[in-house]
Image (cartoon, rainbow, N blue to C red; front, side, top):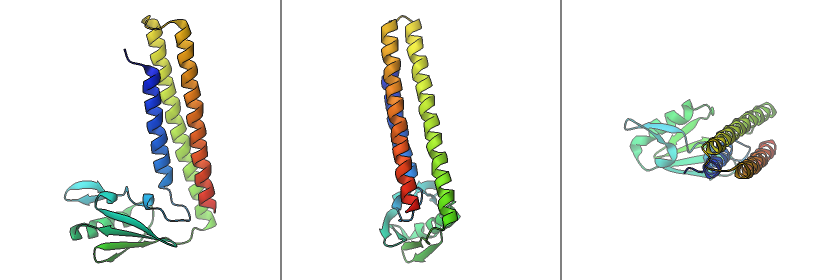
Length: 183
């Protein structure tokens, strides 16, 4: 018998992990390798994440360096970085690509804050969808007489507690990212 509460908890853990990963990849004033490491590069006919083709390092104050392991990947990687939605310029030096990140303007900071709020809302929606699926699973178990009325209410309470905690975690991650963007 499938347990909708356990399935829900696994789904929520994945949603929170993805939320932290995606918000971490949004550019703040300090450079982060997460900004570019998931950019897909056309390499030997496959779309490969940049982090699988080389190492991405941060060079303070605002520079990223990608040291590629294969010289054949340099040109496609530079093209992928420049054609990404990040608006970055790639400077090729041998097997390395240097990316200088300019200072964020006030307007760009506001735009990034709006963007991360929108991303956080998308993850809240995913949490609600998982909660609805779990509650439907609980109802179907009740209808099939696999659980009793008391277990239904206990399961629904547990699902709601996990939902509330997930929303708090998303809010905490969002607040930290906004603070990072604005500093």
